Length: 90
Image 1 (tube, helix red, strand yellow):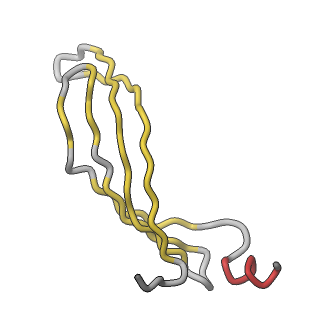
Image 2 (cartoon, one colour; image 1 turned 135 degrees about the vertical axis):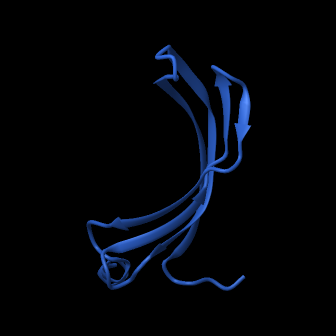
């Protein structure tokens, strides 16, 4: 599979715990598991990266349900050395 410099896959999983109030102002706790898979692109000559990710989640506490439609797009300002500088420094 051909690769594009600066483009990387990422994936992971974790758990979450949160607190919320519903429409009747009743406080409730939320807990579940969440996965993530996506693509991340770091520009070689700009301090920016772009990512597109899919984050399905399984709510366990307050209401058991699966949420498959959590998708995110990010534009980030990056700090530190660029990839080009890192390679040439080695």
